[in-house]
Length: 219
Length: 82
Image (tube, rainbow over all chains, first blue to last red; front, side, top):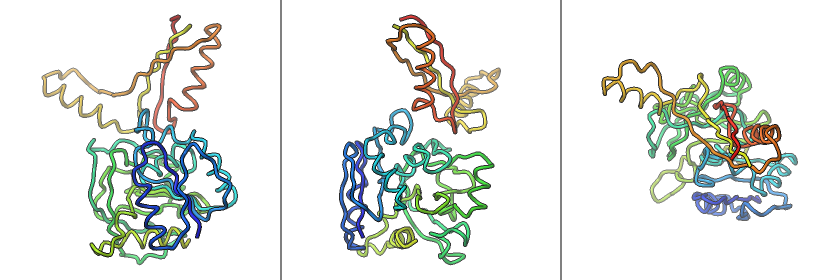
């Protein structure tokens, strides 16, 4: 597998996701600076977590205008997979790849903890394979993770099986309908607030992040 | 030269936890006439435009492209000679 991990000014989870891709999937991983463009045919492009452009103006608002996003568009036009984690999810929403917006956590607190995730429906091509009551334990770390979209959009996401994950036991940010991540209509573009790359360490035994990535990469 | 004063606020339909918190504190101060508080942001842009109409068009474009996320926010702006 060939993957690209984009680094924006302020990205800070780029090394983490690049390492798990090469360690666990033997992926050939290229690190791409946001000012560069690429013509390589990647299987997967990752927009990592962090604070692109310092979260100035709004989380993820400036990154869509980085030169690399032209190449990212060509990648998705070719049918390549695009996965945004945390700030990457915020960027995908701001860039219009995914509907809705990520707004300030309802309790105004930055939240950093491990939460439970479950599938929303069998029809989601990525998470639908999970068991009915299967709960994955994956960390979140964000201040702007409350998913907001109009009722119509949320109904559409539900009807089309495009909800990637729901928060299972507690909702850490006040996200509407407990939404933790969503997908594009063709399931090629997906984004989620929790950090699977932070739950992929055999030493600590926290490996549920690998289940998440297996699903995203395999779908 | 013109100065655009742009006020961005969350739409009425979007929960504004900052506004709610400020309202609660104002109530604790005994300011019970306060019905609602919305916290937004103020952006000031200096523009080198030939006339007011062009400046207005530019400001609309800036807000459409970047300054305002229309999923969650709304804005109003005024332009003054600067």
